[in-house]
Image (cartoon, rainbow, N blue to C red; front, side, top):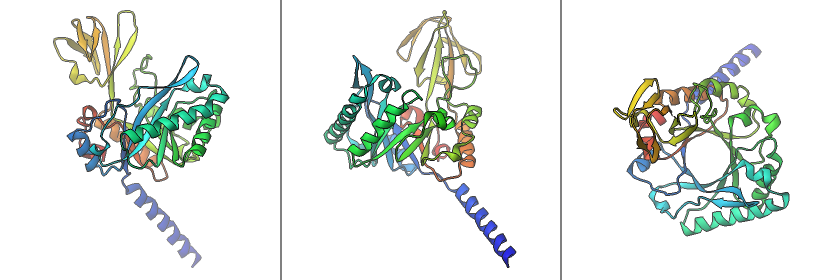
Length: 330
């Protein structure tokens, strides 16, 4: 009888695991533009993917003149354009916590909370239940950043969440685990786009796997964030590099451009490209997330992570969405 019970228990566990692995993950989006516009494409994808929440960047914070200052505040918009629960997101530079004093942290929390409330009131946002903080903290800034998060949690009656970079998962013993209710793991920006690597710096699957070997031991509840964006890395005659966001191979056509290798192009005549003036002889490397690359990342995470999680795509924009079908993102 004991053996039969054991066999039944094992079969039940396998069944439960198999069912969990077959489940689809809830989908939401980030929105990272100052000028907010929800067109037919954004509305259609948001609805078709049964999304509930939109993580919307309200402003950035950076150090200026020895003070943490809000920058790039979102412009007034109509939240009725999308049937979503809006989650305010605030990007704070790491150097803010490198230079801010302990005495300034409480004041920073006060100012951020006040500005979020002001923007929410002006734009008539629905009830705010969560505040999302985006900061690529380091071992040098973790104490001040974590102190900021604790004060923010005490100050508001909202759920506090934050982004997690891959290195913060891999090196959690060094970078620490943030004192928040939930994390959002950014499975992108895996390397420096201005470096010499031939890999896709937005999403490199081997690096993703290397950094998430112990992901199931991470002690914080998290969802995963996956990229939909692209960029071009322009290199001039001196080897200096500059990023052009949103660029794809489709934008680089003859006679102004000549393809020299996979995802690599040479500029054949002086021209403007997405507002940047570039000269003949410059080279461009395109990095983008193809549906195939996105599917590979999703398959890996689905098999690797042993807990329930949602997916948050970065970000909700027609220019990125039109490269994927609904099934690609589902």
